[in-house]
Image (cartoon, rainbow, N blue to C red; front, side, top):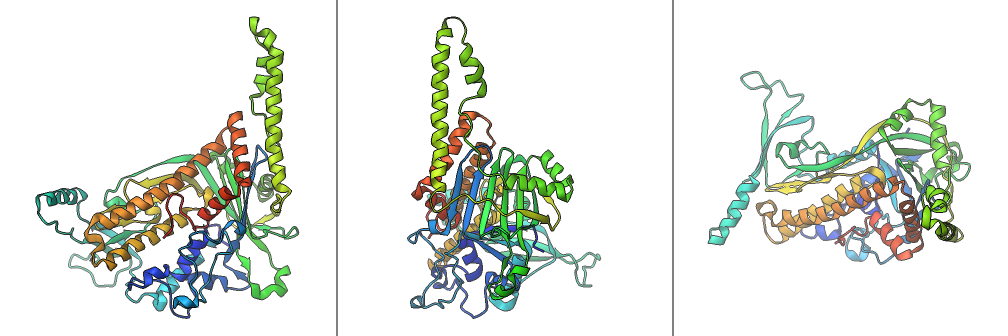
Length: 517
């Protein structure tokens, strides 16, 4: 049974995980793409039978609960001239052209456990013989150069004094299950290692970041996500390689494909079940209520949300305005009651008709609205976690770089958490390669670290800001704001260049504010 802990990965992230860094990284001896015949981590998950442990989706359907607006993205929205740093090289490039390409999908859902296992297997199989794996250990202390002292030393260069590079970072760790050898006092021995660059990729509660005192800003959304694995009815075509998301006032509910039928077992696919993951963001009290429901009640609640299509446009004015306030203007304003009420109702009628018509015009084309499959059963535990956002004030310090959740955490509504972390990896590796090609010590100067920090903070801040704006926009109950939001969604869906740009950002082909290298 699939696990509810899973990630929505963009094609760029899948390429990076499976094939390695773009070819430009390999030329300088800094790693790069795999050149042997072993399958990459994603390929190994795709080859399992009867279910591949990766579920590609080539379409996304998004709609709202209190209006008619819909957004529909598919792989056709990914233009052929989009900047794609992970484009699979051809044989003319001097690289094996058999690498897997993911350009024909918007993304794929991959479970955490199998993905981590595949990555570990890939490392342990000799992917990088220069790596020493130290597992089952606890970090006891970290010593790194002082940012303040380094800044002071940097200023001294204006007097003509040469700036010495900062000393290496040192990390002391202790094995959880040490060998019988112990120090004289009977305590397990500790080991200290030094590094020219210490990369912290240890999650949202980063021990490295905390020990180094690197400040973080953030806040909670006052929301909690309930997630679980479900079976869906295949009678209407099942998931159709589509990711569904419906926005309600308390938060979105997503229905995502997980696992997929291996192409080699088509003859028996009718006997197999189809699975999906639910991620339902809502208020803490409602989340507690959802977890307390019986399976029958919980199924009814999920299907009530997912089996409801877009609604008609609501009035753009508060109901009391046209029903009570305008018809009953006091004193000398009374003669204006009838004409103002008529004008308001006329504007409301035209605005609602325009928005409903814009929705229907898109449905009549090649992308009609389709209800998701019916959810038939829950096949795993219902898990819940609080939603918050955070970002380190700086991703770097002398000899230190934060990546992934150690640097930033995001709301799951856009499925960008791991994608942003892998973007950090690509960016850091790119600047590291530049330093190597220049014959410079990457961690010996803040120049390259600051470039990484500036680029990634700009990109991540744009994504965090966009997600926060979506959260606020879909939480509003103010009638004019609800109408503007609904009309805006419909306009994005109707304007091809805007829709395609958003699809390319989601697919990792373009950055939110920066161009991919």
